[in-house]
Structure formats: C-alpha cells, structure tokens
Length: 194
Image (cartoon, rainbow, N blue to C red; front, side, top):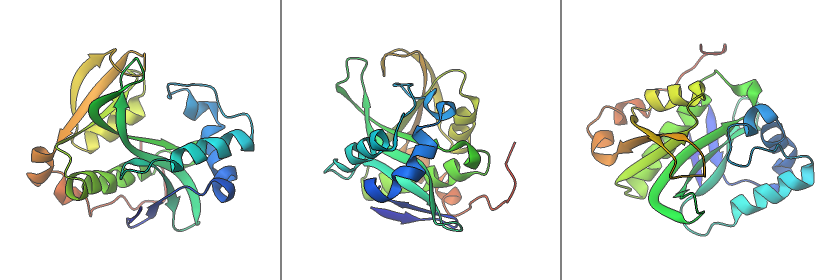
C-alpha cells in the first residue's frame, strides 16, 4: 500500500528500519494511554514485534506508517481494520484510526492521513460505512472525527472492552461531495493547530 498527500506518504511499515521512529509513537505513554493495551512499548524489540504484527495482514486492510515527506520520518500510524468486539472477535464494522507521536500533534497530519485513507476505503475497497471509536476524554481525536465529517452515534461498550464514543461516516455521505471535496484540501501550516 502506498498513498500520498501534500505532506505525507502512507506506506507499509518496515519493522527493522522503522522501529526507532515507531518507538517515538508506541513507546510514549501520552500516545498509548488512548489505546486498548495502554502500556507503552518498553524496548525497540517490542516495537519491532508490534510492527511485524502490523505487516502480517494479507487482505487490503491494515495498519500503515505515516511518513512526513519534508523530514522523511515515520511520525504516525493510520489504520483501517475490522473493529473488534469486546470478546476480541471481529465485528462487521471497519474502523479507521490513527496514532501519532506527540511532536507531530496539532499540525493536521491525522486529518490529512485519514482523508486519504477514507478515500481509499470508499473508492478502492467500496466500503459502505467506516467507523471510528475514541474514549470520551480524547478531545483531539473527536475533533479529527468532526473535521472528517463523521457522525457521533453516542456511547458504547461493545468494542475493546472500554467505554467509548462511536463515530460513523457512510459512503453515501462521503460521495455526496461534502467529504470528497476535502480529500485534496490539506492543512499546510508550520505551527500546531489549536
């Protein structure tokens, strides 16, 4: 998989080469506090193993590296995977999500990468609906979901064994032009967004 935007490349992870950069994401408790398994990676080896698991998917879904082209560095992950039920089985819903190193927060990278991945999900994979979940106190992710045009469906405890907010974007809403017109417009700023 390889997608590009004005500032980013979305590509497969390379576990050996990318582990140090990925450790800036998954080794930081400010990132992992929002994930279902909230412990930060404690070593490069653990991060390499994480990235190897990300590379093992054989379908067209997965978890990919987000590389900032200006510095040729992996700054985050973007995912399009089956949303797991609380019993760890796959639901019939496909989830979009993102994890970025704190140094890259506030610059619009999550929104930019997610727009590219929504376009891939709706146009290449012909998905009827894409979902997202976040904890009620993760305001940054909720703002990204709002910028993407996702609708909040309210609280749920059906996924990840956590109390979460569930969001949805349908292909019909996407194809209506509201989000499709935003796919090519990206944030180009050198200071964090508030």
